Image 1 (cartoon, rainbow, N blue to C red):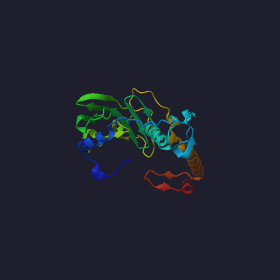
Image 2: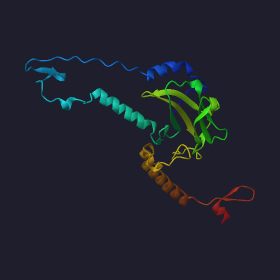
Image 3: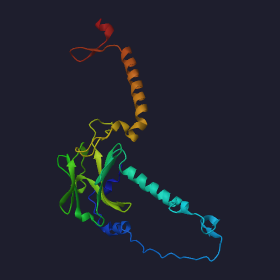
Image 4: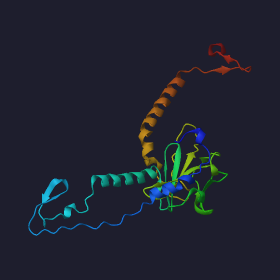
Length: 248
């Protein structure tokens, strides 16, 4: 969840737009011309790691082999992609994730788009979310569940622009509104038009579900035992408690 009450106001990220755009739009370096050395006779050549090979010996297995750093980077990209749709779903134009209290929507847009061109609004009845670029609808839909609206933010919703692995996105955070206090409502979809996900298989939900069920059954058992031992309470017409022995 996000915090800091003194920051809960409409934020303008325009002064960081140029910085973020530069970070996400890296220029490609011009290919470097390879250096070629011709050997006039059989010669031992030392390659990466100090291993020696004779020219002509096959090195196909080494071509295209990823370094540990490259493998780690690919793993980071994959995990980042999973986290953006954790407990949620992913589509071509957007993806969404959720935890117990909030839902985050990631909307993919073209690089170079600044915050002044973006408008994110939750309708007054809190049933619809509209995302506009240059005053035109870019993504819109009826929300599948009720949300809490924060009037301190422009449009009643918290959002920001950032880049994820060179992809520009609008990151929108919505606070869930649960009808039962103290309970957790897991969303099966973000927009009503989506196909539902199986909330019973949500990873974060499964962690404590078994323990919660056992705790509930134990509490229910103790409650029934306590009620069985209680004596009935009688109240007279004046609202006074009457002792059972006195009533009999």
